[in-house]
Structure formats: structure tokens, C-alpha cells
Length: 228
Image (cartoon, rainbow, N blue to C red; front, side, top):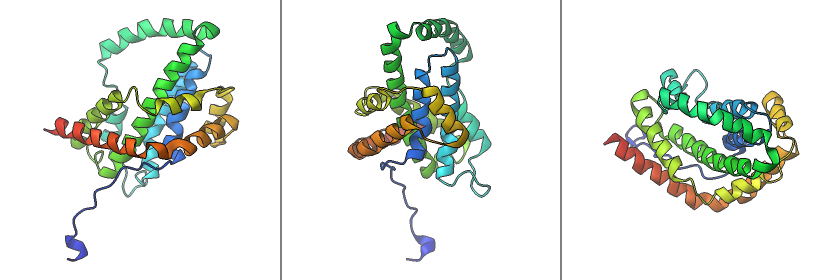
């Protein structure tokens, strides 16, 4: 059999720890610990949007030879919450978030819980975006739309995952988060908070290899349903 007739290689999920794949996801959750109303949400959004670009770059999909299509990038960033529903949710959530941030001691536990849940979700999103790019699911809009629906469904199903405890460990005791985030945004410099997060993740990530393989299979099943 010649190389021209070899069947295409099916990519396998990348379950080993790669800090650059998960750094933006981690900083997005850390941003929620910033006790400044709305700045926390702004920085969370910045890091959430950086995830695709960083993961695509990690897979060689940023250069001119093989970029992700612009319409696919827009679809990844597009909110799948209806516009009116999003506006109503914002009207309700913004005052509550303001009270939450101003009542630091009273509601700090709730803030950490929220950040932990978001970090768990962002890790899964980063893992699956990497897998989707390597599978070719984001190569064009026709496949990207059902793939992103499958991504959302799979991440939602992992709300209480084995990785939640690790997320709590990463966020535990995080301080001067704003300084940590700005140093990473400006020069990708790591301070003690970022270094501790990276070390904690690296020391425990291998424990989740089998679990992440299962998450990938769940995504494949969800995508099959979306495509049928």
C-alpha cells in the first residue's frame, strides 16, 4: 500500500498536560476572584476569547497556510443565548454581581464556588477545542455549527466532574489575582500564583487521562446526534 492510499489517521484526544492549552482557561476563572465589579467579568471574557486563538496557534492553525476560517471563528465566539434572553439575564445579574463583589466577606465563598465551577467548565472547553481542531471539526462552518453545539452539550454534562476538586485546589488561597493577570497579559510572566496553578495542574493532570478520553467519546456521541 503506497502513502497515497493510506487511510487518514484519526487524531486521539490530547490528555497530557500542556500549560499553554489551559492557561487562558485558568486565568479566565481566576479573574472572577478580582473584587472589582465588572472588571472581573471583562477580564474573564478576554481570556475566554483568547482560548481559541491560543489553542489554534498550538495546533499550527494561525499561520497563513492553515488558518481557521473567519466564519468559524465568529461562530465559536457567537453567544448561543437568544439576544432578548441575554439582555434580561444581564439586567438581573449585573446588580447581583455588584452586590456580590461589594460584600466580599459575606459572599466570598459563593464567589470561589462560582470560579471553581467556571474553571472546571473552561478546562473541558479548552480540551475539547483542541480535540475539535485536530479532528478538523472546525475546518468549515458546516461542520463547526453542529460541533459547537456538541461541545456545549458535553461541557454542560460535566458540571460535576472529577476535575472540580482540582479546580478548587488551584483557586485556593489565590491572592493579588489582578497583578497576576496583568503580568500574564502584558508579558506572559508568571508570578507565584500562576506558578502554583501550573505546578498543581501538572502534578495531578495525568490522573484524569482516562476521564478525558471518556469526555472525548461523549463529545463524539453528541456530535453524531447533531449530525444525524
